[in-house]
Length: 511
Image 1 (cartoon, one colour):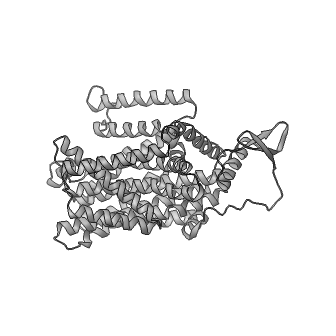
Image 2: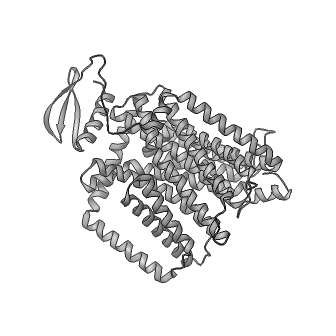
Image 3: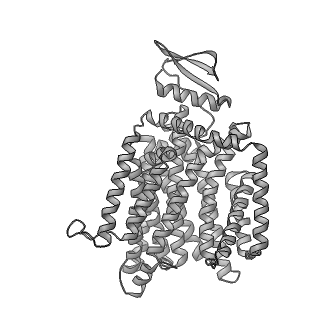
């Protein structure tokens, strides 16, 4: 048994018996067996069985109809979905005319550079510490040259136009963000490179639908494509994270891809329902109680196209790609790193201290209400209720829905208090709802990990540790991708801050 097999077996047995102190150690001059320890106490020897036809049966993670179809028919799934999205984009953009095509193409190119390129760069980061340092130094030098070219200090590739300064800084910032989180993000970015590409293709298809409805350059359209890009990329990242987890437990490549695809169904459903809640509340507020389906359907199309496309692309590619055992080794190293990093916090925050922190947070919330005044409109309250309902349906968990709605409401309350304390006016309702929707989806990724960890672990501290180990990387990825997507959208479309889109619509220039 080599090191990777021992690592995968140890992870599987720890999860199977809910014993984090169980360890598997190799035997000197023996390659057909390993020793089993509970802490430092030796409890037995486990032997490897190489008889043909034997394959480990892992029933903890069902593959489901969707996961099985994508894993068993990856080429067919990817081809059909890609052709459908491309056809939708072409038909819609042809009907929208030149202006619509220019705006949509500009957004897709900017998204390709600002979102997909940083993920690809982070995927190439070396594993060694020295290699990482040299890689980061090279990135900083390249960013400096591009910034100098953007401001006109040096000529960029002689005749080639330099990229805009905002695009250079956004791309470099997101790449450095992912590289800085390498201990948590390595599996996501290395296996999920296709996720942002599939999400961009999905956004292109949805742009066709917005063009048909004459809403491509509207604030609702700009917000929808930003949400679709961020959530689609995060769904693909979640598939790659789940694949690493299942593969490290001993699943075969195809089985792990099928289980990861199935695990993405619930987050996709929640994302779609969250976006439906956003545009339902926005349309009712803007049309005096009347739902405008012309806004809702394109928004749902954008999110479904990007999320489902990312899931199919990543799960399908992983089912046919030759996966190295280093994936399992990296995943187990990541979990060990997180466990070691979390240990000091675990000691500092016993149960009594955690309850005290929760009580203090409640007091802060009450103070914020009295200081800022409970000025939340009925629209926001309705949105929180719909989010709780969507989470309950998607994740089939009452406590998960309450946690998502509670954390989202608490964060919105503190944000409002922060705006008042700084003397700033709150953004328009639509912008707040867009930000809250991305926050709700990010919290969904985090809390569903907490729900799943509660099914495997009994001790509350182990539940929290394993939930954060799995969910925090998904949460942080979506936070970063969401911020970049919103900024790219604001620079491309016609909404507050989106000067380029307005210039195109007015005929003053091109983005």
